[in-house]
Image (cartoon, rainbow, N blue to C red; front, side):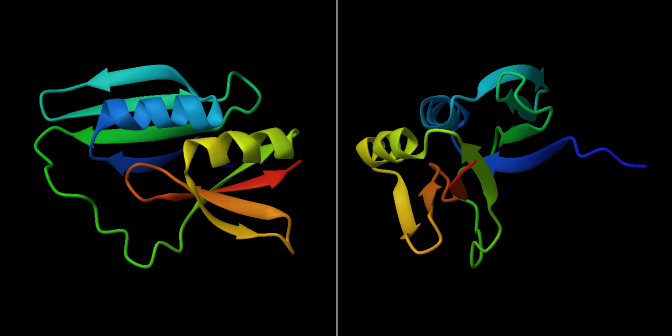
Length: 119
């Protein structure tokens, strides 16, 4: 039996990414591992779910990550879809909307798409 624990995203600017995930999705730092070569930061939603997002910052990395066709994404649900949409619209991070499906996507500082849907 397996338990789903976290997803990882590599980020170019750790502080910029932490600010984005805090402001856009209310994620908070749960744990951190610092090494001479990299830093791992685990973010959580305050206990609503046990799932975590792991941000990896490689200290020597200078160029943006190649996300290919960027077909992989993470999904976040919200019980106040209209307020979330207004927040993300104000932040300027909405990159795609599908009104027929009732969802939209935001983009983080590294170009990762994050799906927002009502729950």
